[in-house]
Amino acid sequence: MKNTARKNFNYPKHHSPFNLPEDLRAKGVTENYSTCPGEGFQQEVQQAYGQTNFRDIEPQVVRIDENQEVIACIRCGSAVQPTGEMQNLELETVPNI
Image (cartoon, rainbow, N blue to C red):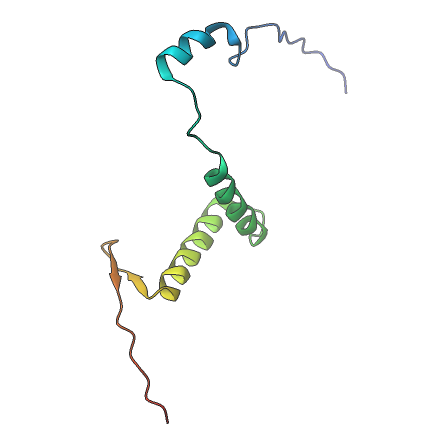
């Protein structure tokens, strides 16, 4: 294949430190931020992606995530009502036979 498009990537980058001192004075430093919560979610999505048929994956991943949330609610003894509110369930005790 022949590369006929000549692109010029010589432009200022968004991460350029040109405005960094002004940004730090205005917004402060990012010492209290972490990427850990986002990384955990990425792992869940990656596992759900492996359960799809790799076509039109978004509805499949959403369905898998919803199912996992319902299973987690059932395991901890609460259920999601149609209104979206959580309600604790009283588990029935089964008599020993």
